[in-house]
Structure formats: C-alpha cells, structure tokens
Length: 354
Image (cartoon, rainbow, N blue to C red; front, top):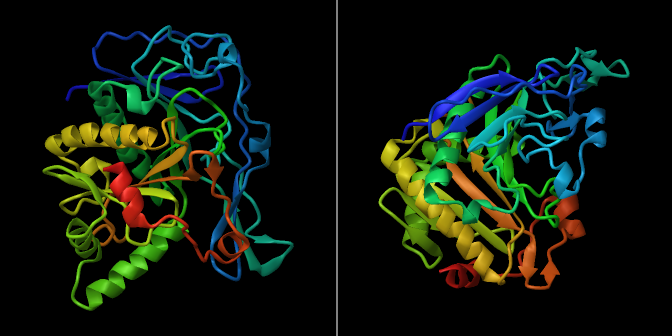
C-alpha cells in the first residue's frame, strides 16, 4: 500500500507528519505563535522493585475533554494542533509529553541518596489522529483507512526506534471516558521509552526461561490457544483469542502466526489481513453491550536492542466494563499487590465475542 508522508513544523517547533492516501499535500503554516515547548520529564527508580516511575509536572496542565469546537485534533480550528483543513492520518509530537529529548538533565540521585536513582526522561511521545472526522471511531473507519493507520504505526515505530536513547516503542489507543481519555476525537499515542517497560521485562524473563527448557514461549502459547475454546476469530496470518489467564472482564490478544518483533517486520499481506481483523474485533467489542466499549488497545513490541528473538509482536486489548451497567475497579489486592481477580470466565467472554 502506498502512503505519502509529509513533514512540517508547528509554531513551537514540534514536528507534525501527514500520512495521506493520495499525494499532493502542501502543509499549511501553524498560525498560533506558540512558545517553544519546555518539557520537564524525569525517571525515578523504585529501589524496592527496580520499576521506573516517570515524573512530569507539566502534564498536569494538559487539555481535558474540551468542547467539540475547541478540539485540538479537528483540522484547522482555533485550538487545532493540525493546521491543515483536512487530512487522512496525522501525527505530531505531544505538547504535554511524558518523555522528550529536550528535557533538561537532573542529578543522578534524589536527595543525595545513591539508593534513590533518577535520570532525565528523554525519549519521544506522539499523538496519532486516525481521521479528521470528530464523530468517527476506529471501528467505523473503512478498512482502507485502518490500513493507512497500520502503515503509520510501522513508520513511526521504525523512526522512534532509531532515536538515541529510545529502548522500546509502544503504540496504543485509549477510548472512552471510563478509561480516562482527555480527548473524544479518535486518536492514539506512541511512546518511545528511554527504558524497557516492566511488563516487557517480565515477558523477556519468562520467554528466556521457557527457551532454556526447550520451547518457544509465544509459539507455544499461540498453539495452545488455537487448540482451545477461547479463539474469537482467525485468518491466514493472525489469530485473536481471549487468553486463558485474562486479567480483565474483556481482554483480547491478537497475535501473528509467525515470529515478528514489531510492526515494522510485518509483510504487506499480514498488514492487509490485520486491517480487516482488527476492525472486526473492535466491532465485536462494541456489539458486546450494545454501546461503544471503553478500551485500551496496545501493541506490545520487542525492545529495540534486546530480546527481539524472544518477544513476539502482539496486541492486547482490554476493557474495564464488566457488564452493561458496571465497571471493574481494581480491588486492594489488585492495585496494591498486582494479584489479579477476574469475575468473568475467559471462555464465556470468548463465546460472546464469537
């Protein structure tokens, strides 16, 4: 699929890119005259677990559920981050980033204590607007546009992975006020982390242990799920299933049949089928309770420099909605000890999604 990429700059120096299904774009200058971005991002390490915690005081002032006429993703409006009058897919550097290469340096420890380590939060955060239609959703887009979004994800994964200091790239979408979105316009985000995330670190450890015993973890998990009762749908290149140990009342994994470390490594046929299956899954999710399902959909990709033969690309989609009129709130055991309890049997939700 041929997608035309066009680069430009916003008035504060941040980069914006357009991904168009037809060539010929001449970007419109940003008229807002914004001051330069001055991010303050730092990463502190929990000395008891080793987990990173990012501190970003400037994000407390980010845009929160503006009225539709002040939407920063609608094209050409007075508050728009996207100056052009129309677009297919647009990507720009987040105005309120969690990680940014322009953030200043910080002392290597907190309060002078060597056990309390910290570092500057370098990296990059981008916003991906899937369409210029404020009232749309990924599930309602034509397959051709979903395919353009996939090309955009792969392009940005490749470029962010090449940035100095970026160790992992995470592509994700949050949808629904129940999830905590701050904008209603259909969009997602991309994080270029300056560290390997805790979740991926655990996957790496489990995959290495499994290989030492003679197996390939993701291949074996996929084979077991394809033989079980939790497959929702599948194609030539992909299978979607509810995992046997699902944490959330609605949880779906979408995994390619061959080992690929990231979106960049997908072939054209794999991307074509992904566009069809991904939209189908989102429509099934919206049909579950007869209303748009709040969800997080995130692409787990291998780190940039390690474990690329161990971690297989896969999508994890989950929702906090446990019934048509009920939400799942994390119990003390879950939020305090990360010991999950699921009230909905995975086999039941798989059958309903089928």
